[in-house]
Length: 245
Length: 375
Image (tube, rainbow over all chains, first blue to last red):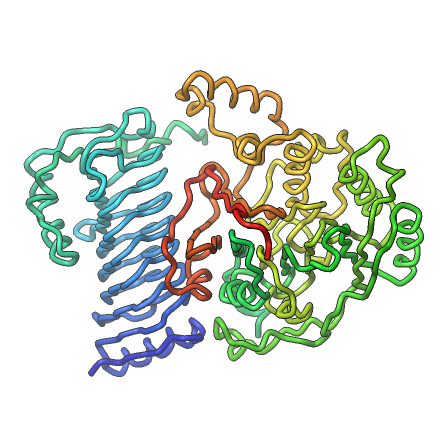
């Protein structure tokens, strides 16, 4: 069975309660129509349910999300995947600022662009590694304070242009950022270094990009045919000398 | 219930403009700002509307707030001494009115929040006597009087003072403020709106957004951390900060830079939301020299802190962010309409299928301009 909900003028708290209750009693497929601006979608459900969103979800979409798969047919706003733990989000559009804030697991696949501060303070623990892939461009402060996880930026429609903003990886101390193409050296944050990718990186990229390309109908070989670079932190504790105890 | 629960707020702004000058009633902008109900907390809401007074388009329209009828009397004596009053009337309101559409589903959840108490609200359409503008321009004369009223007449505040425009604001949620002021009965080619979540300054009628002076109106999400510097910079030019809210300085800075110093709006924004020195160093020589000069001369006009702002004036709207984009702003276009809002959903609520939707770069203004005359 598929539970279809008309979200027109439905307050976010009601909507999320309906989904949580239905998921609790065994429903696994949800289609949300006419969704517009409702916040905190997909939170509070510790199960592998599928939620398809037709519309524009509000801020903090998938905050603390722990299991569900979210397919968004449209753009998403700010703070998507905030502190997300498990599950997958597929966005067939662009997303706003501060995406994947403190994200600590799961996948966030975005067809289009990310805004400012994408991947800020992502983290990882052993095998729990969050992955964000954006097919478009990023604005300033990509991977700010990043502590773990993988961020892949593709710039699919911008083959000849720089696809990143300024202050790349400022304060980064863990994880890795892969960028298709190149970046300007004077946009690098003080805490990162730019490196060529090696065979191990290519394996990781191909693994995640194969799934990504299946989701959005891109050609993985074509995307992999362009060179990538990676950004790694210079130190795992960039600010250890900043404070005096 | 409301006071004991988490309020996920953070101010909201929304703006819409018909660049071909078509006038639209206030229902759409109300619906847009109502969708973001949760971003404000009931301590301020307001709207600016341009093109609403075609009958008195040549007069300065003073929207006034009075703490008492005594203040109103003192103000009117002052006004008669300095202007010709062409027409005056009480601003029509509906105390107890509430926004009845359930745009965000909030009414079912929390019930209604009617506006029941207000200051005395009155509007005056005035001409400047010809003999008063021998040595100062008309706009300069009006500016001086607005500053004098706000600082010298106890309990009287000017909400707006431009021609063929008005600001409707108060204490409450923005959609309820719209119902209180009957905004569905006004038609404007530019609407801007604000839902307030006051942080550092009191929530009161005069402190709600938009802030207006002459033609200008400002709605603002964020905080002007440089308020003290900006205030001290503006005071010697005759500006008086009397409304207890940081946003006030933004309206006055535009007035100073654009109206009095004849700066193009874009240039003014390069002073207010100036590029970083490291980026100035990379500019072509001519541009680098200009921006360097602006930063040197107008250093104290720099707005620091997080903000997204929409400036309204009779010829257009301008949306811009702080330089590192610490507050949200999304824009959209559909035919002759330009929209700007804190959230994309607030635009889609009134325009589900825009031609383009984009988030402007930090420090880069989005400009809407009238290309035809107002209908």
